[in-house]
Length: 228
Image (cartoon, rainbow, N blue to C red; front, side):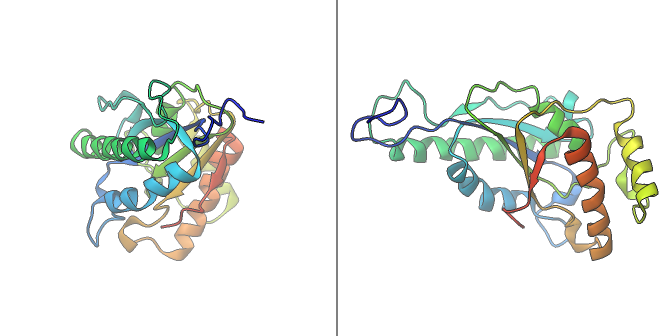
């Protein structure tokens, strides 16, 4: 039996809501001193869009004040109903190319305007985008997660004990609120890299810190399966 998502003789239709959050801070520069944000975006985004069957793709920047950033890129519909062709693969190739170009445009803007690293604000930005698809909201975040904004700089905090991590978490979330992201998975690419300057011990501590922030406070799932 055919379903609404399976046109006769055609491809299965796409249905997922997705978003891409890109870090415009100096630590993401495309050199040995950075975690190569654009390189990682190019390598990861095509697979992400295909794997998650993204229909809608929204965008958000990570800057020094992500929520207030003037960087704007329109949401893209990868599988528009207005296109009536039954075989959709050719259409998806075209629209995914546009989606990748839009992500690079957002990254370029984030790098030029208010560079910084308000990661939590970037997630708050995508919490406000439309969600018209089905199931889990898939959010790809290209960032080293070295939170650094006007009010909080993760690098100033020791994270080697639970008490110190609690102190850092409280300092980050108190007074700013948390993104509302129900039924969301965050896919991290570039986590803890910072141009190779972060020690393995610090990366492990950052992992525990962000697990507390994202999984316990924001209550999203975290997936590092897209790797470096």
